[in-house]
Image 1: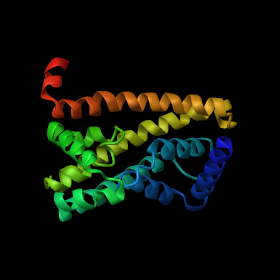
Image 2: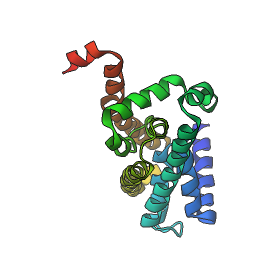
Image 3: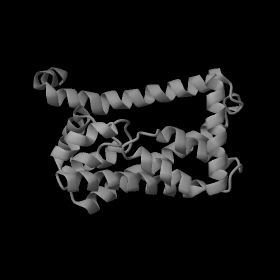
Image 4: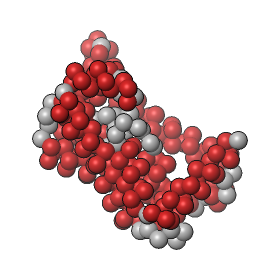
Length: 218
């Protein structure tokens, strides 16, 4: 069952990339950076593998640019929505778009602690990645600065994911769709992302909520 679903998704995505090219990546990455956290870890690496192996008429540089553009578009949507609507409306209606008060407050604490550089760092981290535009918009961060760090962070992240995709393409068992191999790669990816989330996001948010815990952790 799981294997069949995976094969169906792979077939759909490969067909969409072959038929429509870069706009598919832009769209998916824009969605990933807005209200629906479509995993970029699934979007970019597979596209990079197909391009590197000559299965689709796309280039690695184009994939990175498309991914970066999509990330910036999605983040810009979140930024201006939060900036124009204001915090009360985001808190009130955000839950209808999978944006809870806890998520908003967590992103606010992150932005408060790391400032503008946090925009760059957030592009490399799960959870915060698609929410960071909200506090940036609420506090009316300089849009040009927000865009600059968003583009730089997204370009770096997409470049890393392209390298991962090429490396994955060298795993023959994975490319043959062997479920055990897919689980191994997914498990490794989840472990890496969970570690990044814990050390850079969870600990920071917990420290902001509990100053005593922050002192003990030092």
